[in-house]
Each structure stands twice: as structure tokens, then as C-alpha cells.
Length: 385
Image (cartoon, rainbow, N blue to C red; front, side, top):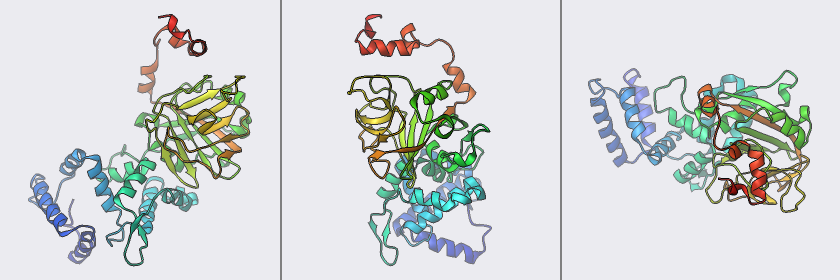
């Protein structure tokens, strides 16, 4: 790392521009740090080697790394991070990952990420509102794929650079690609919250246009997939959103699942909402219950009849409310939703991860989950220990 190959004038201009983002005290600290790291790099003090830089970066705290990334976003070099800075950075990130292939929806995707950001800091001159460090940290939580990618720029590139992985989307010949809601940019956004072994391949298990809008066809279509799924829907208002279900969709009379699930928005705003720990009301999957206290349908978070996202068993109506489970807002324009398209993708886990799950697991009752759920409902599940 260094500027030894740059013309002196160009190097001076870049240095002058970059220094505007730091105070004199911070610059003195950076100069001291550079001298110390360059001395360890076997470069006669000329530059910092990638290996030395990476070793220091990896030791940095989450807050320190985020502050460093925040400083990098000052693309214009004017000491503030405004919407134009963020837009320039997003265009560069998406071009790096998708190249010219994503140009058709490029600006639409950029706007979706931009609209998830907050600019609360007063800025001098013509910049208007700017993004504070606190704003950036909040935005980073909503768009983890971007946070991963920007952080990875500080380490030497390799084939598995964090934030660059885009799941391969597999679907049959009977499905026209123009019907698909889950564009690759959306898959990349969702994948920012997932581990590496879940980012290789996603297979389309259900599409309402092909399979029909009903719970029964939904269940029969996804019955071969026992792993995590990504549920995506578009409503009559044109909003696109959904949820990642870490557990299979199974008939229950109450909330179930684990804290790996989350909700997300894709259009017109791109945001992701992980569990807050406020409660464990994660997944909902109820059908053929006659009690009004158990609404038939599937969903995520919140409380009965007031879920973060709910789709009725007929797949013809639903609702989305703000919920403490995920700290999520209403995902659409209104709380009451009318689904237009629903699709479900199976997350194909890597071979090594799948092998860990093979073979008998737990007691007989644990392996026969449907029976266990029914026993739980009548209060005798724990009588056979």
C-alpha cells in the first residue's frame, strides 16, 4: 500500500483531498501508525504490505472498522458524507459485483439502498443533510451485504471476499425469468445476513403464477426441501418484501423457529431486520385450525393476529405490522396486504453442512415432529421422557 507509482502532483492532490476528512491530531496519529506498520513490512519504510495491514485490520473492533469505512465514504473529500457520496459508493459496489449485467435495474437498486439510509447531520454549504457516524451504523445493520463488501476492501482480494457472494438462482424451464421476483441484486442483499455455506445455490420451490395461490400447493411444492427457505412476495401496491425462514414450514398451533430467521424489504426500499431478542415469536405456520385464536396461514414475528408479516391460508390476503420481534416497520404501504405474486426459494446448503444433518437425531418424538406438535397442544408431550 503506498503511492510510490503515482505522479507527485496527482499524489499531492489525493492526499490533500483525503486529509479533509481528518483533524490534525488524527493525521499525526495516522502518520505515526503508518511509520510503525511500514517498519514491519520489509519495505524500507516506503509502504505497508497487505499482510501487515490485514493483521492490524482483523484486530480492529467492530466500531473501529465501521468508523474507518464511514471515513472512506466521503467520496467528494469535503468532510461530510451526503447522499451523493453514498450514491457514488453504491454504484461502484454494485458495478464491482454485478458488472454491466445489473445495469437494467441499476439505478432502481441503488435508490432502494439509498432510501434505507438516514441523513440527520447538519452540513454546511450546498450539501444539505449529511450522514452521521450513528446514521451509518444504523444503515449498516439494515444492509449487511454492503457493510461486508466495504469492510472487505480493507483486506487483500480473493475468490471468497466477504460481501461478494451472490447465490445462483435455479428454476425450471417452465418458469419465465421475467416472472421471478428475486433478482440477483435482491438475493445478494438477503445473503448479507447468511453464512457462506448458504450462499451457493437457491432453488425455486414454489411460484404462485405456476403453482397457484393456495397453502396446500405451497406445502406440496416445498415438501422436498427440509432446509431454510426464502419467502418473497409482491403485493397489489407493488411493494416487494418477505422473510428468511431458518426452519421448515410445518403445522404448528403456536410460534416456533429460532433466532436465525429475519424479515426484509426489497422494493421500493431495501432493508433487513434481524431478531431483537424481545421475544421468540419467530415463525408461524397454522392450517386447518378451527379456533379464532389460531389464525390459519404462515408468517413471521409479532403476536397472534398482529404479525410482522402474515399470509392467510388462502394466500389471498394478509397483513404486516411493525413488530418488536424483528424491530421491523410495516413492510408495505398499508398494514392490510393483497398478495399478487408469492415465491419460495430453498437454500441449498453446502455438502459438508448437509452431511452434519444426516442420520437419526434425538428421540423418537423429536424425529416425528408432527406427532410431537400435536402432543404439545394437549399438554402431554413431556410425559414420555
